[in-house]
Image (cartoon, rainbow, N blue to C red):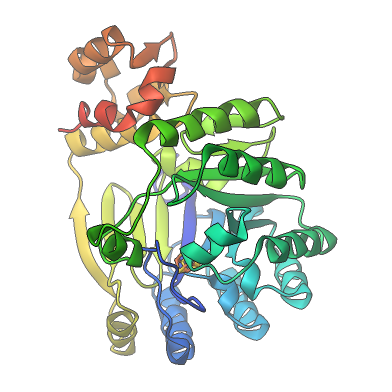
Length: 379
Ligand code: SF4
């Protein structure tokens, strides 16, 4: 397929939240006064890319909190996207939503506009943990939103949970999973907390005020989650992601399979035709650039073959099925062993990788030490 007809995924970033969570280092701001100038800039950016004739195969509106936008603003944005890109039939169209910002009306509007997948942040079942994280919703509110989403016709819902939280025990986390699976979501993302610089959690950690679970407890939570979810109808298909049959995230899977994606909005990253680029993270800089009619790109780099091969490998290894050796050959014209024979042999003999005729994948031990494995593929 030529690069002119190859499809790609589209990501739109909405960097606004009602309140900044204590652990959050995403590109998000409490700045309601910027919403309208930002949306106008986003329309300009969409227009600047509207010459792309390649079809869009998935759309993902993430944040921040996309559902912080009003129904009218969501409708204007989605209409604009649909009008200026060539959207394939039957795409997956995801919107991230925070339970504190949803209403029945907003859900109905999203559904009518073609959104067919919702990603809801639960994070934890225990309200004491939600408060400690600075979340704006309770478990009860999550529950109400989940039910409203079903009533609005959403039959593909992801819920995010976090483990390794301060004050969280293994049984707290299992209680969260039991509570969540009772609603039968189609997809669950389980991410391990990382305390990032610039967050309130980081400051608390510096002052010795953050009581994190031990590494053994954190790994225990992960292992128990894998066992519990795979025992309850979910397929573990990526290090941190679980889905019922046929409901893996097509958008994220495209990224892990090293396919092209275009990211629009402040701080959004793109990877198109071997070129990686990202926008100014600051909404002000992003808006100002577009007011001058200039694409708000902060960094752009063309990756050489070695860099692309490395990224192909460590992204593909995130998938439980592993990286596809035939896809590697199709893309780079070489057998993967010509490039990574030493690394694959070393990691296989340490019990971190497993290989068959078509794939190379992380072993159960490799899943716990994924970053060590990925490091071996760096150029
Ligand atoms: S809602 Fe999400 S993006 Fe917004 S502050 Fe909380 S964690 Fe960050």
